[in-house]
Structure formats: structure tokens, C-alpha cells
Length: 71
Image 1 (cartoon, rainbow, N blue to C red):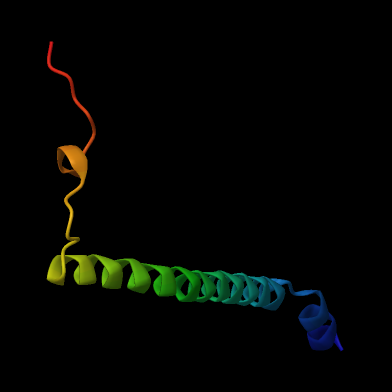
Image 2: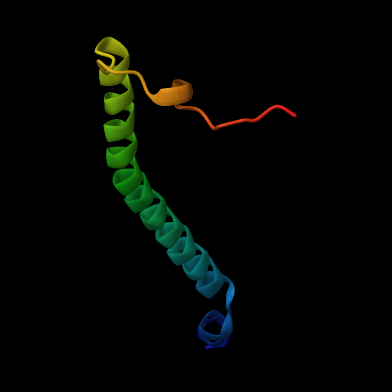
């Protein structure tokens, strides 16, 4: 009977379950973020690669960079 009472009041297993749930939640959020951002990053890199292979016919004014005025 003492063994059952001690097992019922022991909190070590509960803590382990809480950590497992927390790790699962972090993994789920990480995977979801990678899926969402992965598609966008793939699209961005594909656009950059396409622009390198076939540059626009008319260049952007000032090289496309910020306008810097020398003093």
C-alpha cells in the first residue's frame, strides 16, 4: 500500500510528461514555420535565380540601389 501511495504522490513522471508536451509543441511550431517560410524562401530564391539567368531588358535607374548624395 505504501508503494501505491508513494507512486500516486510522486511528481517526477508528471514533470517528464510536461517536458515531453513542451518539446512536442516547440517541434510542431518549428516544423510549421519551416513549411510556411520554406515555400516563401524557395519562391524568393527562384525569382532571384530567374533574374540572374534572364536579366530585365531595362536596367533600374542608379543601379537599383539607394540614392546617395556626396557632400
